[in-house]
Image (cartoon, rainbow, N blue to C red; front, side, top):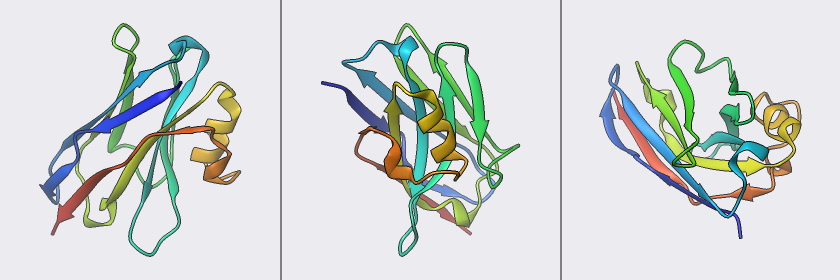
Length: 131
């Protein structure tokens, strides 16, 4: 079974940094794209960023470009989301998700298709940014 475990959430002040990790198991890492999504209270889940493990190509939502960086550690089957210069509007539950169809993850992150087009989901980790 594909399993995704997100960790690293917490409380951080505006302008600070936070590092989220997504540990994947039960999959061939190079065959999947893994993305980060978030859901704020009362809002729809939205894409944040994703990485295609096969070629390390990365994609970002406009709202986080220049502030967040996604990377992967293939040996550890882990995807990292480095969040810098965080803002109160980044407050949300962050989820990692994976799909062997890279286009599904990319288009979901970019908002072209719905987030639930991505097949596998982990439980979320709460990020709270105080002003």
